[in-house]
Each structure stands twice: as C-alpha cells, then as structure tokens.
Amino acid sequence: MTAADATTAPKNYEVLAELRAYRLAEEAMRRRTRESMNMGENDLAALRFLLKAQGDGQLVTPGMLAEHLGMKSASVTVMLDRLTKSGHLSRMPHPNDRRSLAVIATPGSDDEVRQTLGAMHTRMMTVARRLDGTRAEVLHRFLLSMSDALDDAS
Image (cartoon, rainbow, N blue to C red; front, top):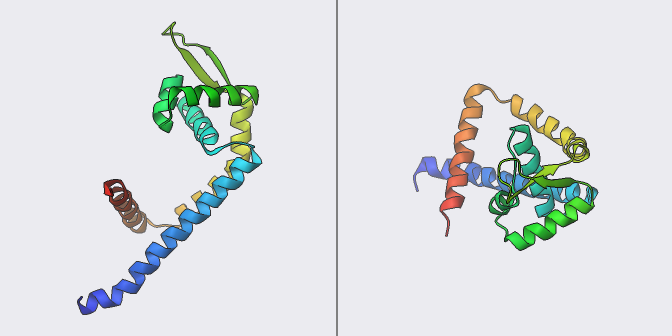
C-alpha cells in the first residue's frame, strides 16, 4: 500500500458505507410504498414496468412481464389475477396477436403510483440537480462501474 492509498482508503470505505446506507434507505422506502399500496415486491415492479411501457407506447404481454421479472408464467398469471381483482390492471386481447393478451395498467394505478412515489422522485431529482456536470459524470461512471462489479460477481 502506498502513502496515497493509505490516505484515500478511509474515504473509499466511507463511500462504500454511504452506498450501502443509500441502498438500505431505498429498500425501506420501497417497503413502505408496497405496504401503503398493499402490494408485494413483484406486484409493484410489474406495475411500474407496465406504466413505463405504456408511457413509451408499448403493449406488454404476460410473457414479456414474466421475462422482465424473472418469473414463471404460472406465477405471473396468479399475480395478474390479483392485480386485476384489486383494480390495478386489466387484460385485453392483443391487437396484433389473437393468441395473446395485452396487460394494461389502469389510470387509477398510474395516479396511485404517481401520488405515492411522486414526492420521493422530486426530492431525489432535487439532490441530483445539485451536482455540476463534472461531479455528475464522475458519479455516473462510478455507479456504472459498481453495477458492472456486481453483475460480474459469481
């Protein structure tokens, strides 16, 4: 270890500790969100995926949802039944494939997610906007590298 390494090592550990603290805070926020919406983790992830796809003008099939969530089709069917019963989504015949269904988040679901997550997203964007271009780029590269390090882990 060089003298420079000895000087920067404590800061490096602090960065990792703060990254872990952020992850824990985000997990706690997601748990509170799921609890307030009476949803499981996959339910909320499915709803967010549907809303993003709809915002991009894409139709989602149950198979696409299964692939995105890493779930088996039978489990997705049970989840879709539950979310349909709760009024969060509906199913309709796929307009381009008569053998398939399209899954649609209801307008009320969009409103509920925006109401529940909107203030949190605003606070996060406020913090992100405080970064100047150089710091934002450094942080961007760091987070990409951390994601790659985790993806490469066995």
